[in-house]
Image (cartoon, rainbow, N blue to C red; front, side, top):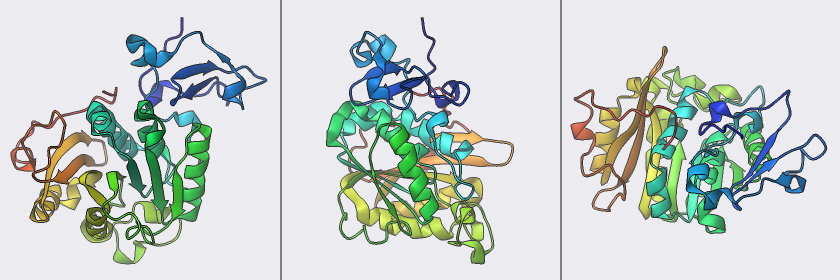
Length: 302
């Protein structure tokens, strides 16, 4: 009997190999032998369809496997903020499925861990969902392609500054936007520079890139679109939510997480007046920030 974890920390490799393969579209788990570990489709199927057995389906991975995430010295690897964003999506997974998005996009895809995780979570929606991912770092775009391929997934991956070249073509069409922006307060001259520094350098108060993202996301999002964004306490998330409220967006914290170095908030935004289709209810950030009653995600998924 196999004991499978529900989060990426319980899924890894054995001696650098890939012992298991997961076909999110078909709902099959594959056990890979040494001879076919590079070809999951050639591996023997365990004798069941996982998605047909709810109790077993819940135990199978719903996020990208860390052991299959590609890397490059100039690309940001999955870290606490990446895990917080994926855990927020997991916490909202049932509502995302009910939402039935057709187009999803990650701005600043880095290693591809988040967009791959989102595609796996929405796998039961089948081929009706299409994914886009962008990053200003060409190395990150390539690493994301490799990560997606390792998981048997596909997305249109573009090397671009936020969504440059796409926002007009995709205006009003994206149903889900996810972004782990450069939020660390840094000197302004570090913002948008080459290499890995661009993944965290956020300028004054860590808001330079964040403030550029919002109008672009507003243009990209469909009428029912949702935006999930990671912020740091230093970014003044209360002010961020107030600014978005003035643009017509309601908001709610999905995950709040404190580490030794930082306090992170993953905030969900949607157009005010449009039903958010989640267990969040009608409370907004006004009822959250003054108190400590944040909804905390344990990291074990939904």
